[in-house]
Length: 445
Image 1 (cartoon, rainbow, N blue to C red):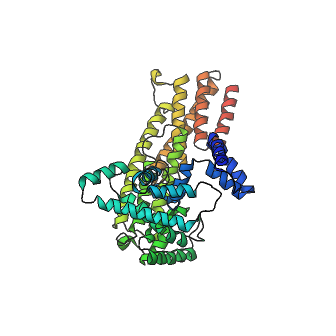
Image 2 (tube, rainbow, N blue to C red):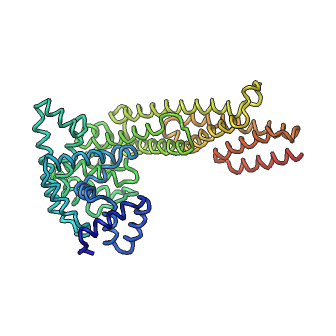
């Protein structure tokens, strides 16, 4: 395999790139399970030669370079668009020989990477990036032009990119034998990471914080990084933590929490949206509660005040959803003990549309039942759940009585189907089944 010609590799790349992404991913996985080298080749050939060279060059940044549209900010600190832009800048102006050298090294995906040589390229690129930014510091026009070229409002993320490129060897050494996915950050691993942090800072003072970022990216529960954080600063609250050099980690967690809050802003419009919004609420609750539990964050501390503000924002958003849900409830399942004008009694397509809308609310409210209290909206959430359940229960009993007296009324049967659907959306499948059996019996009476 190591003797594949460039032409053969190009043909294989054309074949893999022509396949749907899901299919090519399955082929790569299946192949790699039997032949690691072949799997490596096929994985490389799912990308263009240029994309593969760029990806390998920026490999040290990969865990922090996810798409910000889908990933929390701590995983999208240096987004893919920035990597593309910086690569073009290097290739076209800053260091074309570095880009050319990297392409040459990546020409045959089966050839093992010369990590040391590639790290030297990264360090060279880092120095040039830093120097270019420093050069325009006192020239407003050049400063603006470079920001425009890189598509940034300031150079912070670009500087961070350069720092990680330069510190890549130190970070790689510090992460050696640390699990790629950490489900539980126990005392032993926390101490190991604290020691690795100290060692990394000793070799490169800028490497420490990025080591924590990269470890956080591997944590199933990212806020657990505060266990390491606490060992580093040797404090057990945020009164001084937020004033240390590694305060960026706590700030990153709060940015993640704000990202999750944005995930359940607005009103759910479909079951899929309701599920996504519910997941965002769960993530928000786990991050903020996790931070508070890990180091006992004070309400009057810097982070504590931000958490309180985020919880207030979450509460306001949930109030809007609760209000919309109750409004929809009155349209879909009116109070049977109150007079409702005939023009407001929905049937047919109008009732179907209203039911679908109410199902969305039921799904969201059910999925967020356990996390609402952790997001500081528990009391209001429970009240809304109770009101909907009571309305459905009351309407079902009234409807059964009506069906017994008018067994052939098709509108009553339509209403019974609506109530059963809402019970199912609430996760009350057994109650829905019992209700439908009682409704069938009432019709047959």
